[in-house]
Amino acid sequence: LEGLDHGIAGASVLSKCNDVSLRVIDVGLADGACHYEWSGNVVHSSRYKIRGGTKNFCKGSAMTEEQVGNCLLAGREETRGFIDEVGASVVIFGEVGIGNTTTSSALIAALTGMDAESLCGSGASTTRDGVNRDIVSKKISIIKNAMQHHDPSSIKGKPLQALGAVGGAEIAAIVGGILEASERDIPVLVDGFIVTTAVMIACQIDPSVCRVLLFATQSTEKGQIVALQTISEIATSNNIPAPSKPALSMNLRMGEATGALAAISLVRSACAVMSDLAALTDVLGLEMKSC
Image 1 (cartoon, rainbow, N blue to C red):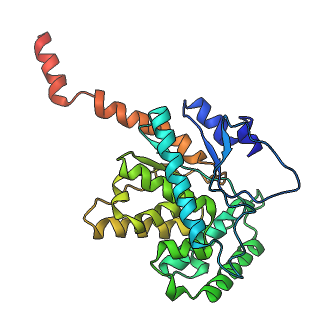
Image 2 (image 1 turned 180 degrees about the vertical axis):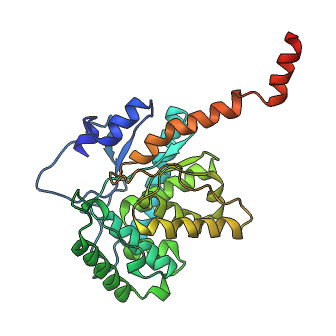
Image 3 (image 1 turned 60 degrees about the vertical axis):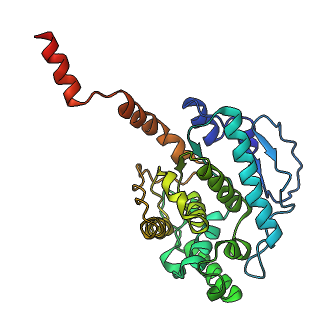
């Protein structure tokens, strides 16, 4: 977050070069040994912040019902205010966190009933030497322990309960932001695995969210495939056209909405084509006039 506050992080660099307004909200950063005062220009703490972060979901609920509601509200309020402030016509959501691919996999497992082995990848731990299988095995074990503790049958298909049981503050806040953007009919350019998980949850809460989705980037995490399929099924069952597949596939593991920020030029190009490209009849008309 300090890198974002100083304008040197991945999202900072990509948003600047693509002329995208950036705002970062701390909704649950765990307290550390050092205290840092955010500048307020880019990063600021939400009044709904969960002090000390979420709890260990293998031992209890990650968040209380009130905390889930507050994080959703934080996402809604911050999104609403920023849209009005900058006059946004497209919204991108991203996240900064450690271990939130595990949280995302746990949420998808809880909500869909899929087994952990089908969902877990290596997250940001992959190096040039390849995937660390020990880390993947540990993630699978964590999710299995969480599912045993929380009784999956009681939370399957119940997004708010799942967020409380195994969710993260940042994911809940993104869900709230997506719901707000959808209600205002503003397209959401969707980043990778973690944001796709939040989108899936938002679609389960309100299927009309499917109308505004543009998927930017294919994740290397297996769980995103399940989330995308679930979103497509929700759209189809509600007579909404299924969103298109992710436009890019670059093996990114950065988070921070970097995949969606890299794809913003594609959105601008598509808009230019739709608004300015001549139809064949227009071109033939020009040729006829010149003869």
